Image (cartoon, rainbow, N blue to C red; front, side, top):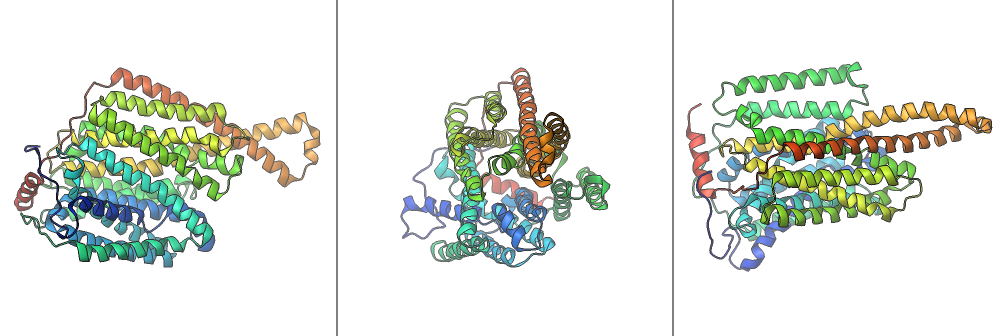
Length: 530
């Protein structure tokens, strides 16, 4: 990537007014990042209350939440261009206003298209505000721009906020109502806007880069593909998959948008996502790893929640308290990755094997320990392991994208692919697959258990139908969950063996060029002819 950043003098942020102490300036931007990351428009932890108090279905709320992730992913390809076009102050002000408006709209509307559109736009500006803050303090976090170090901080903030926002949302809903979470975040966003207006100066970039040469049509088509893919995953079970016209129609639109994008990428000089980014070895490898890893981890959304609520009888607050265990795992996973991967330069193969080994431990615990009488505290270990494993795999493969050898003009496009496959596909595709498998397992076990119980104990036939159905259904779910965890455990062990046999011993060596160098690259890109 050309010119690298060397040693620095004392770190300072020229965007912040001079009367703020230099040591406090970076923490100001961390405060901004936390507010922005908490501001999602829709809070998926409140899905039960939203479904109960509005005309929305659970799938509608999930679709709106995933639309926010899609907006964040699509923004990756142009976020540096926007950063070099507008000052940090302007980016934060505009993003804060958009996020504030999104929270207000999401608290008052039950229109699914409006919710999805608002959350998509909110996700876009959420990502831009996050970049504006994190890029400002990057040299404070890692003076040599080591991205393995920087991504440990990024995922510590992002993944931790996901868990903490879920906890906050459920408890706000428990003591008040779900809309109060939007109002709390509206107030915090208003505070952030006031602080930006009073504490930040409009410092312009030394090199002005106009927003020329951006393939906005490609951005729209990729967004359509991402949204259609997510729609199929979220609404597939509700509409009975491809037996319904809705799923067929969404699939055809998504495939059409994808093919048009791939065709345009063969002749456009600056496509939104180029074939070079799509076919890069590290990008393809990360996509395959995410597909396998987060599908196995999808038990979090389907099997784990069913076990806690139906088998153990936990309430909403009991279930959300489990997020504290995952939160502890995220902190430990980031710390472990920082000391081993970022500092000691453990290889990608070693770190990938460790992440999948932790998943195997997580699945093995549920396979061997799943029972009716498990206490909540006993779940600390597997959920801690799950949190650590997910953050480890995310850090190392995002770092691999930086180390992929792509030109910096193509690198942000690879981040868009990585963002979609890691966040959206992990959240939507995996649960869809696991949900279908679990449904068929439960149905098959129900028939077998119902027949065996009636044959062995005729007295059961005298039980009320509702009681009999509930008992057999619960046993079918418990047995099916154990079978599901066992199958995934076998797959995880097979993947570990494959990793140990096939991966090389490449070590992290991912460094960012100077911002001055990046500005010149994008300056040439914006002025070059199509």
